Length: 230
Image (cartoon, rainbow, N blue to C red):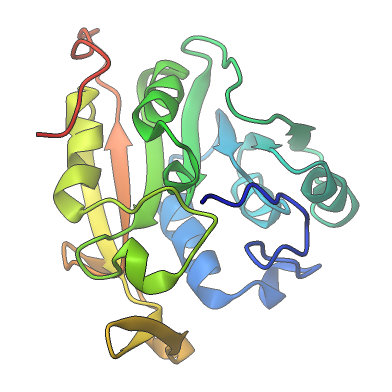
């Protein structure tokens, strides 16, 4: 059974009040996205949590952060507000404007949604032609959902499924990386690895997959939806 507890101290959220105190594996994903997305422009951080990632991205861009937790949005406004961030409460499913954003970042989000494909397509449709989408999700190949005991997730996605999400949406995959975060003890998720082991590794599968995509400037129709995994 999925736990929809969105409270700030549910155990599923980063709760530090400063960027440097956010757990390193989470920071590294946003820093990877920040290095790929061009400076300037206006974008969306979907499921932004307490706002630390939007704050980072806003150092060279303007960012709208959306999250389903009112507590998280209040916290973001208190601790991670900048002149170029706007935080708002939105519980999925919500409507996004069509082709409005130069980039969308949505890290560790799709696994929290019952219909991850519908959520992913909503993100894609909100990006301008030529815009960027950076997303990540736990890798079912190396971090099976059943092994984690994570009651906040609906499912994990294999590396092939994660890349196929982008390709089915006619996105160009610019780069992908793997990241390991946990020890595996007797086929179960164990304690965190050392921070030095959180580094993202290009095109090497890890317990988490992060993908950088770009929407073609020439319009291409999406595959007929809904589709199902074969």
